Length: 182
Image 1 (cartoon, rainbow, N blue to C red):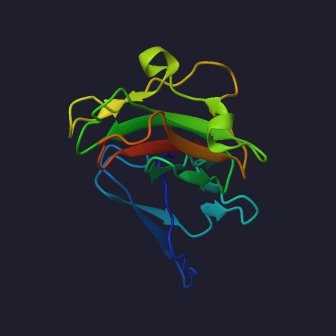
Image 2 (image 1 turned 180 degrees about the vertical axis):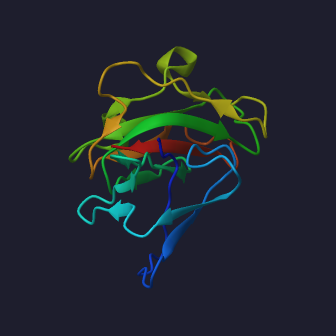
């Protein structure tokens, strides 16, 4: 049994004889194969309050959930990771292309590093990042650096989006980062 993309919100106590927990999920999830809802008997789900991990009991063992979350950044913004996680995907889209050569790079920042002082995470365009002069309203997919540990974030690390040129006509640029919790 494997569990992925499991998100629980506003947990409620489960009471009563033969009570069960219902988890809704998107199609194709490995939790079940008969639709968008699976029912788990009372006592078969455990949430660790210390780290937020969710465990589902199979026939004889507990399987840890594999949670993902995403964040969207505009140039000049940073995101403080609340939990340890690994960056697994980066995409970019803009409404109006830049008028001069401009790149958008994602950085991993630790401690007191400035946004552009951390580790670069995209290898697109000879390690410069997304091309902000690319076709408007077209999604670009980032190629993540392969160096071991670079895409792994500890709780408290930051992901920052830095633009290489100032004063461009770039409008509506958004980079979405997808993380997998540790």
